[in-house]
Image (cartoon, rainbow, N blue to C red):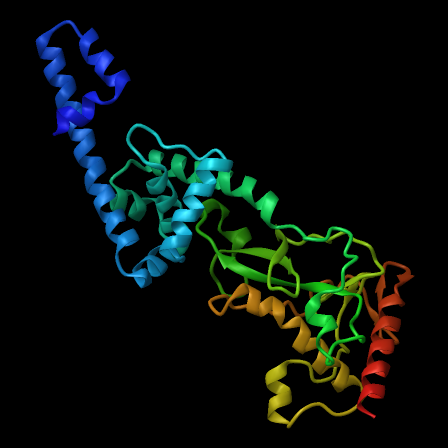
Length: 329
């Protein structure tokens, strides 16, 4: 059976014929047999996962079986992920997801897949490059000019027409990372473990449209705006809540809902902005970046950036609050 499969490969068949000495042919056959057996043993474990209980795949690779298969096909077909002589494209993707899904080290991944540390690192990099190419096509706005009003806004009286120019929400999270010992200090945050700060934006369909490792301002038409929390610096295009007033939804539940000008606005803002937390998913704990952007000082409710006062978003916030109050009367 092994020889039959082996000689179905034209290149291997021609190589075997080209070998001159019997001893060399036997040695080559033994090497190929060992390679094949190792590959079959690894594929057996992967096959058990991809053909077994769906929850097991979710636990190990953080995605369902069908999504794993579709992702593998897409990366192979469109983004350059390739199988090698000893490692299939599916195993290469499995290595990548095993590291990310469980925060596994090179050492434990090497043990699980029975490859050298160098091979694990190389295969991880191959998938990373393919995924980054795919991200360019996927993580972007459907409507780059933001001319269309999101359906969620237009069809919900709680937000329409008050937030008619909102295009999405922005927030950040700290993702645990494994870095070399010499680099750990600059990655250690308030939780005492190495993390990477990631800022993302999503639309109201719970789709990521921007992601950046670190903090970066998103350039866009400033007649539109993203919803942000109080930790962000007040800038054109970034609409935050009233500071000093109740904001988070659980706080409103404890006091039987919002009351007054500031709280009614903050409640609607918090409710609409919660789309970013649902997009992240329940497994991600968002970091409250209180004080982020404290380069400016607040004066009369308007943030100061250098010597320039940016009152535009304050006017937008006041107009929305007045609209919400009028709608309740």
